[in-house]
Image (tube, helix red, strand yellow):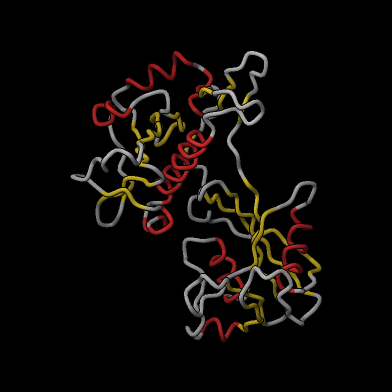
Length: 294
């Protein structure tokens, strides 16, 4: 339904699956003068400038932070790019050129390709840091393929471990000139958003849409249409956006996840009286899709 990528999406990085398996090429790329490094301090990325830009560093600026946890991201603007993990136990570095910021609050202000690269770096840094041990046997693991996978050190296990991505549906449910939005108790007063939830084992995406909507709001859904997707590395979700047609109307909060859910007309959403999802999220993209009558 849409061609423009959501924030953090877009094939701006040539992930170069063959190169990541070539240790000699990776070693040469690490020392190349044009190679750029994306520092990730804990879970934050280095941002600077006005308007904001993701700051990419040369090797000489990250030398002290290089180790086994440097991660090959691919070719960015035709040059090798690596992520560098920096522990939050270290005092925030590079304060003279920028600030480490949460991508959720700056992603929309970045150039789309830099937002994509930073999200990619953040996701792989956090996954590697959370996967130091094999989930099968509990032995230590080491990075492989430039940090894009890991390998169990136990010779009796030796399992390959791949980055975790958690699929979640997010859906704009509509019926005529109104759509269904809900809110959680922890959100700012007056803010509403689309219905969302994780896909369960053995479940299709369409079935997940129908289940989540009914569990949270008691609304039955018929036709389900794909809209777009958004990588959401907070820490490891892939948001799969849909538009669905409601076949019932009476809202009831079935599972207690929502504080409130109700129908809104386009005019109500345009009035400014309803707090809409943040513009960085696919939720806002779905609501705008409805408001614009698409």
